[in-house]
Image 1 (cartoon, rainbow, N blue to C red):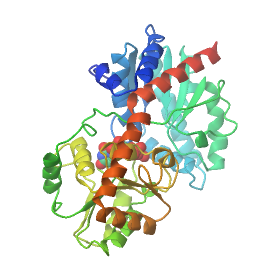
Image 2 (cartoon, rainbow, N blue to C red):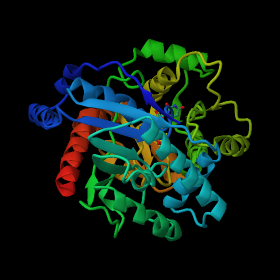
Image 3 (tube, helix red, strand yellow):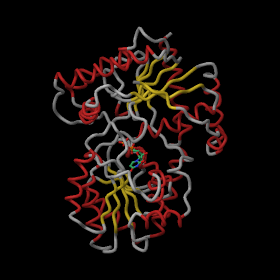
Length: 424
Ligand code: UDP
């Protein structure tokens, strides 16, 4: 099945006002080139995870700038599809092993079914964006069935991928006019796309409910309702319960900082939403054991019976915390990093992947190689309010200049222009 998601149009002006004049003008000119075109973004899940988050904002903004833009989400017939694509995701980030013939069959058969759905529903566009490995084979499967320029966008850290899998997946990029990666370092050698690879780091929506300014008292109310003692310091990591997000390391860092700050509390917010991530519960169980019933460690997983919406809770915990952490050991690009920095908070990130581009170490946050370093940074920041404020200001300014949604939309438009000229 494939469903189109409907959105109300956004107000483009408020976004453009945040940009330097020259950037806003560039965006308007580029958007003008697509006035008579239709654009379609397809991805694998309506909610949860970074890609869903981006499209949810990018599609309305694109429409507001006069480009007829739609978003479609697939529902594969076999629910095991997402177990397979999660393995593919992990292997592309470096996990070892091979897929079984059965797993490969599930992957290709489900996407074959989706290709039929696309044709039967008569979906059409002048420019198609297919997001992530979940959709990769669709380009080839649809090759003769659809017209238009086709781009494959991959949001994953591809610095040391599983070679066995890369040998099987990379030939599929041949069906695309262009491939879009989050970072230079991720561009795989020898991908056979016609026009090559375009780099477009992901971005956040400053006006989305999870990022717009939240009054401090409201943030504190929500934190209190979540069981946090608002009179004591709080460190938070917002992330799916996922091996690569290293929630165990966050707990170790918190324990290290707690030695000098006995009142410290930790929140790990990973509300389960993405139906393409079946491993979460397993990771949660192991993290729970590691937390060892410490009453100051708060784990949030269930999306039910919450005192506020998911977005309000993300916003509240980021706004209320003194220090934020994203201790990933692999990260294509951490949206949560930009979201936290946009709140004007010091964020300590794992020294990996996209986080290294997002944070300038010691200026707009800190990069760490292990839990001990993270713990030391947390402790240092907790005693120095001025340092927290300064790093937080720099962090917000960096996001404003580099990582907001209009810049990403502009990148996608430039990528589409390039792909189109390559296709001619
Ligand atoms: N997120 C959320 N609620 C949660 C945990 C995460 O809304 O409880 C969001 C988070 O705010 C971010 C996205 O999920 O927008 C995660 O994107 P990121 O790039 O950080 O990681 P991914 O999940 O794509 O690996």
